[in-house]
Amino acid sequence: MFFKKKKKVKNQSQHDQPKKNKQQLTEEIDWQLAKLEKADGNERIEVLNKLGSLYFELHEFDKAIEYYETSISENKTLGKAFTDLTKLYNIKRKEATVENDKEKVQGYLQKSDELMKLTKDSIRGRV
Amino acid sequence: MGIIDFIIDSVLTQASITIALIAFIGLLLQRKDFGEVMSGSFKTMLGFLVLSAGASIIVNSLIYFGKIFSEGFGMQGIVPSIEAINGQAMNDLGLGNQIAITFLAIFVVNIILARFTKWKYIFLTGQAILWMATMTTVFGSVAGFSGISLILMGGLVGGFFAVAMPAIAQPIVRKITGTNEIALGHFCTIGYVFAAGISKVIGKGSKSTEDIKFPKGLGFLSDTYLSVAFVMIPLYMITAAFAGASFGAELSGDVNYLVYAFLQAVEFVVGVYVLLAGVRLLLAEIVPAFRGIALKVVPDAKPALDCPVLFPYAPNAVTAGFVTTTIGTVIAMFVLPWFGLAMILPGMLTNFFAGGTAGIFMNAVGGRRGVLFGGIAHGFFITLLPALLVPHFNSFGFVNTTATDVDTVGAALVFQWIISPIMSLFS
Image (cartoon, rainbow over all chains, first blue to last red; front, side, top):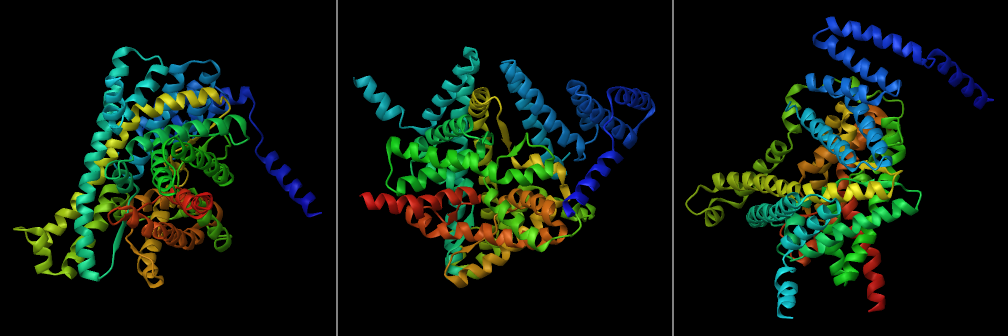
């Protein structure tokens, strides 16, 4: 009985946050891109991270990396940009392994190393 | 024949040359051009020599500290530093060659296990594998292994740890990261799992550390070298004061004995800095070469990355874990001598990285309360295990130091408690 209850709650929470379809994601991206042109300071970082996240959801990994890397180059506060970038570099490294592209494999491993170094420096307050 | 003998007896016995040759092979396998192969190999050799220089600085400082500590307190004070253990093993004990080849053997065993078992973890933290190779080589040679058997045994034990540690951490890592694609490759994992266990029991229902605002004043502690200095300088100076001016002056010559103690503490920090710079240079060419191969052989591998991979998930937990772990190490420093164990001084490098990562583990399962109590228990635990090794390190000729990174201590205990008794049965 308890199990049934739990399942229902889970279903409900999934219902609360339905997965966005491709069109919705594209529309939201367009809206965020328009917002990015005028945004500055913290708002700009938020928009950049949002774009990274939306492109990640859309499986456009190169674009996601581009926006997250821009976000980190402008603001080194630890958060989703760092955690998603680690995942994205790993996905791209895997793709490169399948394609047998050694240079790309090393490139993404290198990027991952640099991100971890930046994480260390960020937490030490050196950047 | 004379030339071959010369190469085997005089050239290949030099660890710096063997290590450069390993890098040379790795770079050739990557089909790098001639210039890159030569410069990469040379840099690797340079890295080994820088590491050796750092080790000498650390040992000199530790010899001084050992003398004033014995005079001041009538007992041995042990500085936990895996860097110092590695430096002494590679240079003073002449195990550089064996450690370098065991390092490779661990990589190979890791790849084989990941390829043929369900544990698909490839351990990518080169520095941690070097520490593991150091410990398995030291304790393997004491257990009676030598030559190829020493390297094979070290490779098997180290390779097993390289897949088993990411595997036992993975359930909590998955909870923290929300993905199963990335793993943790840091040889302090036994401590993380222990701390998480305590945290889960004590911290049930406690709020996350990420809602706390930490004072900015704690920021300087997260600078690892500053935090080492923050502990070592008072320790050296207080110890020198207890040893007394006349004894201190015997060692310090014309320099005031307290000023000399201060400078020796700074020398220790400089030694760690130089040694780690050497390690980075040493591994910069070897690791990319072999991890490229590993990820090709095991295409569905889960890369086990260094501990900072988790820091962005809970930065406050890193600071909280560091502080509570340090409290635990200070308590252990005073408590362990009551039980006949050595006095282990807090190792701030480990406290930061292992304590910080443990903080993230503890926060994930037990929130703030879990981090507080689990962290203190973690600090005690990561001091107790190295304390068990002190008599062995003393008998092997290490100067006033013991290992950190509890998984490497675990591997050493596997040799001491399991493999050594079995070996003695056969001999």
